[in-house]
Image 1 (tube, rainbow, N blue to C red):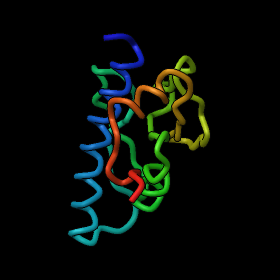
Image 2: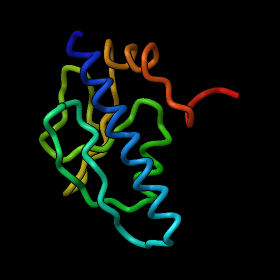
Image 3: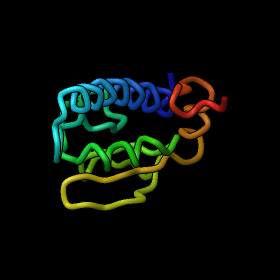
Image 4: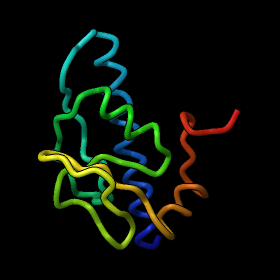
Length: 112
């Protein structure tokens, strides 16, 4: 498995975890920031970031965008599109973007 494949797989796993967090927050009516898992491509990352549910939903609604803690962005496979004090939004580029399309489709982004 190459680097782009590993990164895409890890990011999709973290995205699935964060979607469960998002559903729990909504189900319990929690307002304000929630703790989400960093969606970087590092398999060893267990860092959390505080972000509002609305901000998370806005980033996650874009097929190739993920939230990460600062310093976890990887310019080989992504570019920073939002820079906040405690979190970043990154967008996949090149081979990593193509890998997401091939191997890790997300239901929220599928065409009807």
